[in-house]
Length: 235
Ligand code: C5P
Image (tube, rainbow, N blue to C red; front, side, top):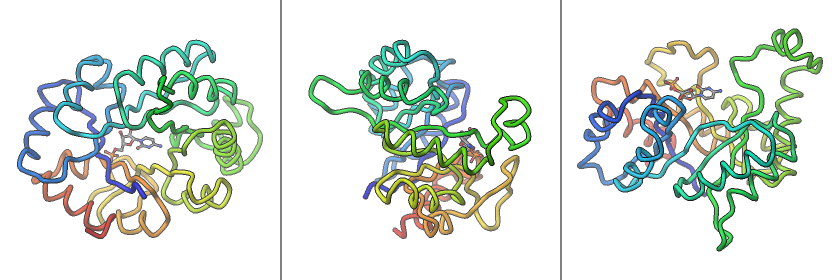
């Protein structure tokens, strides 16, 4: 089982990222890192290659959503970057998810894990109804999109730790759940509303927790990372 703690590297420059990563130079365990739009658009694909060269695994969080052919070709380029996990919006339809998977798969059959975003946690049921004209309850929509991702051959979804158990019930135990919204019991929630601790996320069945500010903004990031690993993985 590949459970792990993923640090969300929400920095807007290489200099800030490298200053942060230097804290971990003497660590035996190289943290799994999430690179999102901010850093990728600021620094380009070169930043992914540099992080890889330092020995980190990478979740490239670019949330693709376009016509199937465009997503397929983009995924093929991302696959060449040799990231470990990448993602897209399930709202792009099953045809888009299937095309993405095809584009991501290399000639030798290997590929990064492909994860779907269902409904963003910033979308309320009210906004979904008013803005998107989707009339079903939010949790039904999330589970439906998760099932679509599963039948399209994807490996899992990004969701709240509180939804992880239900996703597993609907899509099977092997279907991965990647869960942000994690905070230490004695920490600040910031702008995250529905939060759980690393230990609770483990209990609820998360496969990967994505943790940003509790580690990146900590006075001692290495200690905060170690604490996450110890609470989530029991190591
Ligand atoms: O700093 P924090 O721990 O809140 O960072 C969480 C990370 O997970 C951020 O990169 C954020 O964009 C991402 N994320 C999230 N909620 C989602 C999807 C992604 O917080 N539903």
